[in-house]
Amino acid sequence: MKREQSKMKTANAKIVPFGALGNGPLADEAERQGLPRMKTIKEMMALTGLSYTMLRNLCLENKIVHIRAGKKYLINYDRFADYLNGVSGA
Figure 1 (cartoon, one colour):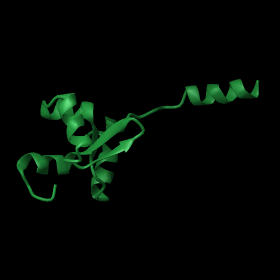
Figure 2 (cartoon, helix red, strand yellow):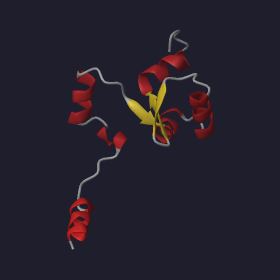
Figure 3 (cartoon, helix red, strand yellow):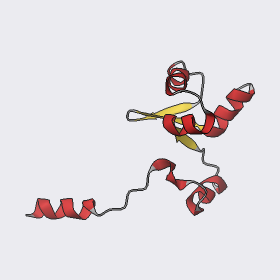
Figure 4 (tube, helix red, strand yellow):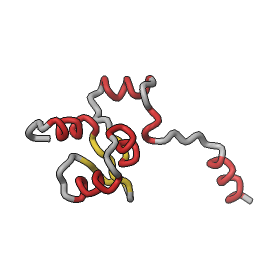
């Protein structure tokens, strides 16, 4: 019975997707603290129009700044923009 109660508590928990911060107050706070804006490959596809495969290959070849969180690749949005613009050191 105790195990079922703990499941019920977590089932009602509000989960906020990583990219759901958008332009809300949490995004403003992150920007104020100088935290990087990290986007998943699917979010980057929507923002740039590049294919999933191309973005993933750029990550695998270490051509863009990214990290792995489990199976997901999180791409640094600002550094990716620098990469597309040909800024050195990106």
